[in-house]
Length: 193
Image (cartoon, rainbow, N blue to C red; front, top):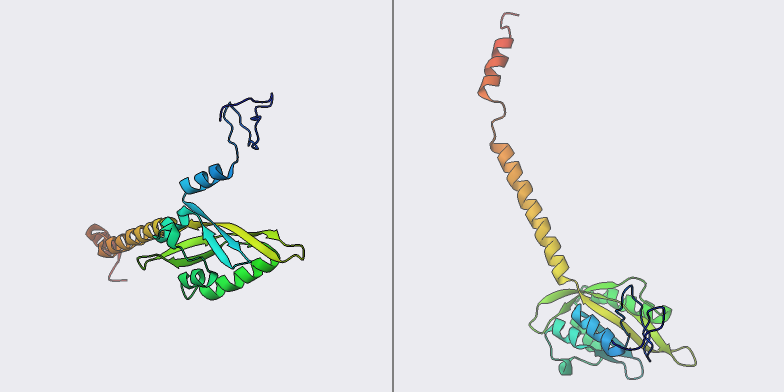
């Protein structure tokens, strides 16, 4: 990242610089961006319409518990990896995105891993290339594992539920009114009136 800098602090090189408040700059090469995404456990997928092939980064392979060289390249195999209950929405959303040029909202779906577990993932994407007639030729997007976040949310909800049940049980076992309050109440009532 060393190199000549202009007076505004941007690197003077063949790469675009994001800028900085100090002497640090980050050039945006493809390798650096992929390394950054990989470090955050976000995988990148690419769809090539000509061969209806999907290519993925190593992060997606790790997420699914597969070696990158055995990831299925065809769309049908990827759709089959989605949970059966999620497939209709996934197909509809991908068709809409293909026509409009982008997924308006991420698709949250379950994907089957190599060991048969289901993980939750968030799929984003957009059309990045069209031919001269406007036909989509390439789509690209990230895939992020939501499972750890959902597991934490479920754990917190479970803990809160257990705490509420304990509080209810404690309340149910507590005497309704202490004995002294019962005597005071009995003395306040005049049986002759």
